[in-house]
Amino acid sequence: MLFLLIPIRPYILVYYVSFKQQAGILKTTSVQTVPNINFIITFTKKTMQRTDKKQFARSFKYFAYTLALMFIAPILIYQAFKNEGHPFYWPVLITGIISAFAAIGMGFYSIRVMLQAFFGKK
Image (cartoon, one colour):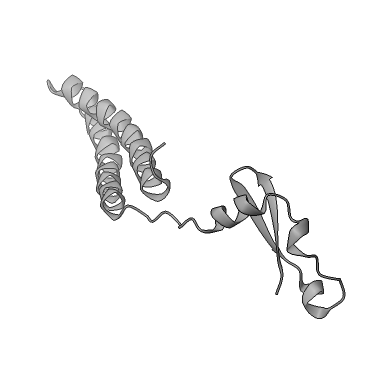
């Protein structure tokens, strides 16, 4: 099996496996024809970054808060509009609207935390 190492950018390499070369249809090329062989060898020795499990668990905690706010906000807004004559109409409506915006913000934040757990911080 022959791997051709093709540099696309200085830090990204794409590995192609030629099945025609395995079958003997194409002639194999020597290693000397591959440019930047020292860079390719040092690049392939790097290890993959693992997922940060503590931050991944933290993102699920924020998803749970988001899910709770997504259910609470419409209920509060509905109850406020159902009881417009009640003295607590405005506080309940304002609380419902704030919780609706908080659900949207927490949703974005929990996705951000999860992506940081997968790919690391910039």
